[in-house]
Amino acid sequence: CNNEYIKCLIGKEKINRQVISFKENVSSLNITDYYFNVFKIREKLTSMITDAKYDHLSSITGRPIIKEGVNYLTLKKEKRSDIKIEKNSLLVEIDIKSCEPNFLNYVLYENFSNDVYSQFGNKTNASRKDKKIGVISTLYGASKKNVMKRSNLLESDVDEIFDYFKVKLITNSILEEYNTKGYFYNYYGRKLYSANSPLNYWLQSSAADYCHLAFFNFVNRFPCKIKAVIHDAVLIEISKEARKKLSKIKYVIDPLSKIKLPIEVSDITKYI
Image (cartoon, rainbow, N blue to C red; front, side, top):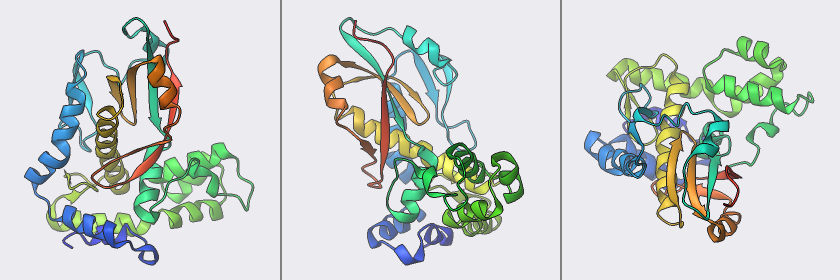
């Protein structure tokens, strides 16, 4: 495996040969492989949206931006109901629950949680709000001291979060590769040329690829019309009958990695 930190992302006590094999393959990918396996799918997904032009190259991590048309990424939630749809259709939002922490949780432990924050701080009776702030702050690169300050969690709670997500191990491994090569890979083989916030950049980039792959798989299998991609969510136009079917779907899956994550569905507009 060319990427030693990739091995570190899988808890040694929970090694899965299928995941190892996939990751070893990804570690040797070149830009052409990434283009055909991932980047091309991202462009195919957003090209279905006719009133916005997405750019998948300009950001440091590969999170998309919108360069032309309706900027759905900054559109206020209360304005989403103004999006035009066909008569007798519904506008529905599908969110991946706690996408980034759940993605890393799946990479490390091969499972997802409907509430990934709830498993921390239970010995000290921490509030869910503080648990969520603690996890998000940790994964976005805050120090333990700052996580405690922002979340009001106790030191033992913060230690639990850092240990569970293997923050030190992953960060050091990414930096080692970056300092050697001048770049490091995200989960899918995209090269990242900045390590100012190692785990944060790795996770943002990997989650962005995951979302596009999973949503592309979804919209090609479910009777709907995609209206917008908003990072870890999509807006889709569907019929009343399709809305009933959608209620039974509990997760999306990326066919490339086989990672599946839970979703939350909400109605933007009522049936017209």
